Length: 153
Ligand SMILES: [Zn+2]
Image (cartoon, rainbow, N blue to C red; front, top):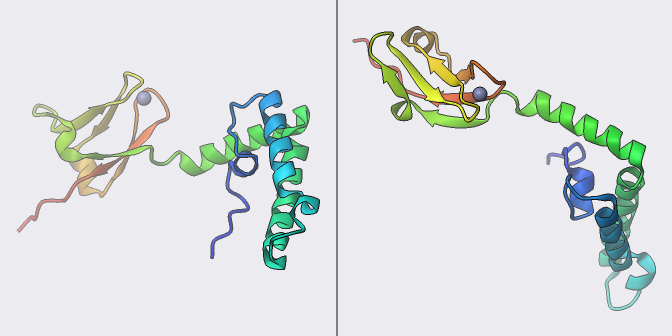
């Protein structure tokens, strides 16, 4: 089974929060969760297995808070998240069907407008070469173009 340990938003997810949360919000979440999962609060009415799970979660919450509750550590963590996202998610931002693209009959190219105002352009040659991921000519976004090569029989 795949491990979630390097999930970019892990610490925020553990604190049931998100990256735009302020220090005060994170602290409130931390305090709420730590109360909920504190081993001392869970001694009755739960099985030992449940107790073990919540203790494990308690440790995670504590770890997440040690990072997110510290200004410098959080800054570093956010920077690392950002880098990871850049390296992981860059390739494709969305999928676009070739039929939804604008066909320029003069150049034979298909284009699609990017939200930045730029364009994604794919030409017949690109498609013959099997190119599927096209980057915007202005920003760093990319799209995956869905098309089927015509039979050349
Ligand atoms: Zn763009």
